[in-house]
Amino acid sequence: MANYDPKSLIADEFIHDGEIRETLAYAEAHKDDLALVDRILEKARPQRTATGCVCAGLTHREASVLLACEDPEKVKKMYEIAEEIKLAFYGNRIVIFAPLYLSNYCVNGCVYCPYHSVNRHIPRKKLTQEEVRAEVIALQDMGHKRLAIESGEDPVNNPIEYILECIRTIYSVHHKNGDIRRVNVNIAATTVENYRKLKEAGIGTYILFQETYHKESYLQLHPTGPKHDYNYHTEAMDRAMAGGIDDVGLGVLFGLERYKYEFAGLIMHAEHLEAVHGVGPHTISVPRLKRADDIDPDQFDNGIDDDTFAKITACIRLAVPYTGIIISTRESETVRSRLLNCGVSQVSGGSRTSVGGYTQTQRPHDTEQFDVSDQRTLDEVVRWLMESGHIPSFCTACYRAGRTGDRFMSLCKSGQILNCCHPNALMTLCEYLVDYASPETRQTGFAVIEKELRRIPNEKVRRVAAENLARIKNDGCRDFRF
Image (tube, rainbow, N blue to C red; front, side, top):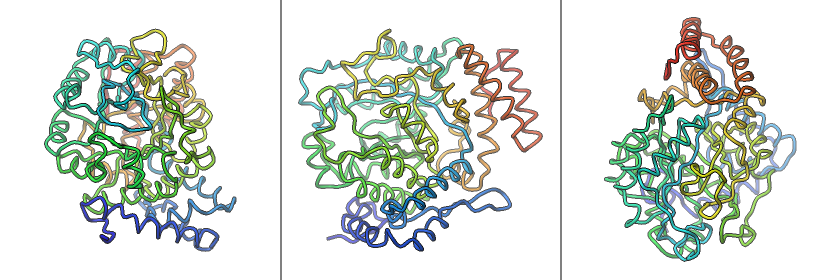
């Protein structure tokens, strides 16, 4: 059997089953060693420097000890430090995005997804370019600036050329004051050449969920189709980076396998990217298995409760402090509210998970990939965030200014990213308030902006931001950024 090697490019070596099992055994044996737990927590805590904050992060073994620890006082401290880390590097900003489903044609047999090829009764749909334009306009009319495009894997119906054409269409739509400024891509594992084409098309982050890092379970859950190849799928991020994409997003589908195994594998994957490429994942998503067309989550016996889910999220934040953590509308308003204080930095809003869903008056359910638990409008989500003490951000400046990959991470790790992100969040929020918000949300938002503007420490940045905000409100100007 191969040895564990985080610098290897072979999936079985950087996600090593033996290492995970030894890690889980170590965590179980040491979960009640409260002195060790305290040392790990202290290591995770942000350390103040002359220029900002730094975080050491945690190894997969250290993080697994925290996840296994059940001492109430220590668990409470995990949540406190997770929020401290998030505020140190991302402030009270929450980035907002929406998924856009292009096609549900799929040749894979994934047993947890209603798009699986054996499902003969779900309507199959693929957006034409005119339909893509209509969906984008509907999203722009809501106020969105950042999309994550989704598509099933089907080399005939959804080849890379179709995805690239859709990206060009999305970026080409300029409707009233609306523009989609960043397109993230969540499509199946592909070749270095195709990743290079996606990079040239101007995508933001390439996102691919591992689903499960347990290889035996992975093969059973993906019995047919190209996704059955565990190694090809797991090694996709290395090919993406070889193709020039330096912002990648990880995630597992919690509920398919034992969560402690998945957590260790996820942190090991982040360590691998850091070891090989010098930059960890730009984002980590934390989806849970949800009900869908012919999918009953109760058929899977690895579901996790809300307390465990919150603890996983907090431990991810402690282990990988600089990553963006994403929570989608799979989760309810109550759960999303809770996770905002566990390190989450990105949320979706007003989402529809059906192909062509945004242009329909009533939310369609026949082509949904999963049930949407939080069905509030984007306006309601924006107001909720502000009333909860957060700044909704529609900012895409770092991507367009070339602050990606190791350049973004170096700014984030030094704390300097705050000099850009805080004013950018306020300016993009102001755009939303002027162009799209309800009167109640607009009133709340302008009060938030006035308060947060005073918190910008650099006098010159504060002055320029105030001038730009006035031009957004009074002169119709848009798209200012630091």
